[in-house]
Image (tube, rainbow, N blue to C red; front, side):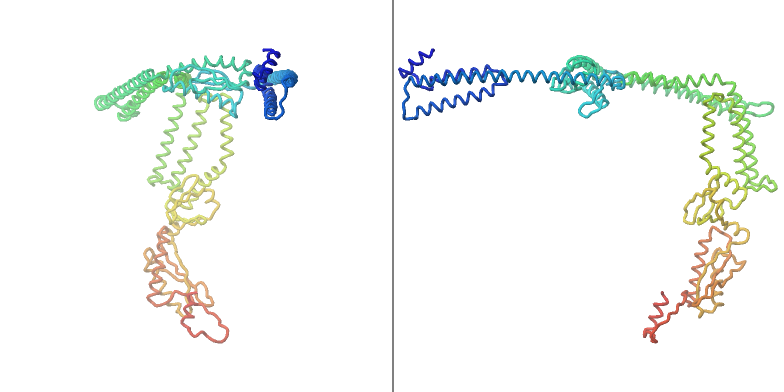
Length: 632
């Protein structure tokens, strides 16, 4: 339809103003939809304004009272169409400018990304020599390496999580079989098995491998898929059932073999005992019975047990690797365990074979020293039991002297054996020996001091086992003497350990020695007023002492008057006893008897006190006054 046709329609009145503007509106909207996306919003906004203005003007024309002629309307519409074309050209120009600006921005971003990528590659290349990366290891199989962190998680955490995820997926029989596929996100790519994410590949991961994220994902996907399928096949139900059955079968065979070996050796033991009772004879060398039948039987049984343990250990060494090789998770561990067991045994056997001559010399030296020690032990027991008496040598010296002699003999034995030990001539062995000796000499000063003090205490004989002694503030019975410490049991049944060096530097009171030789004196102090005759007090105290169990009648108890105070006299009762360990009990019983006798004699065990009262008047209640102050 042309402009002339439109004018004719307006002259005939067949089309209204709004109908005339519809083609223009349709053209505008068509331009809007074919325009570029980045300028479509502005074009839609402008077109809306134009359409609203057109409708507003049309409405105003239709609602007004003035009727505009058709030619004027056509002229006005032409002007408006021209204005619309001008505005449309302006919008196209703006669209071109916006598109150019967008292209420039994209180019700048691409350039910035390229520069950033180059810098990242340079940084990564500089870190390659010093960054080893963390391997993703699944059942001793290294899949690939992780170099960078992600989301605050270190490469080690990522590698561990990926390995655990692969194992969990491979061992989970509830999951349906699937394949590893990729899921592209904005900044990373997820490698997934079904709906479970195995790992995420970032751009940094790809840069470390010198690839893009898509290339790295395509490289990792078949590796993960193959490993997961292998794990799923290896952990399937029937495979596990077969391996479990084989494991149980090996255990049953091993148990049966153990039972068979034990049964055979029990029969062998019974045969040895039967042989002892019937045909076995003692081993005699030049009229010396080296081994009697009992010892020879024990020796044969001991050798049979050693052989039995050796066979059982051999079977166990063979069985353990077999058991570990049944399951793929422990297949590599089986050979390691075998070599861990076999290599030391091979080294020991080789060393023993090479040092058999030296071993024979060592055994001869050891047996000689052992029997010398046994001879000294026999002599020490004879002296301790006083069956053998040596002038000036006390029985209590026998055991500590034997310990000293035994120590010297063993030290002499070690000095003789040392050159024949394996590796004794090596510098490492000698250096270790010197180092150990230095450490012992520097760190054992206190130990040596206690040992020397124990040696001195033993030969000074200040006390012996069972004596009731006092060391500093500790009072108790000696229950043990060692070269380093002495242990006392107090009257509260407490065991106190005292270093011998402390005893040497402290005062020691031996109550038992005094009680055995002279009789130990126990004593206690009491006070009595001058109104009680001192002879009466002496009589009652001595009587109370003689009534006490454990107090000796001879020598007779005695009383000492210690002090003449202003208000009272101090008396001390002394009594002899023989059992020093019972001293606290006897003293307690003595005090009880003193209370009973003085109570029967109607003598108060209260020392009087006198007070001066100012004012010249004595209180009316004199009895109450005396009672209060006497209690004070």
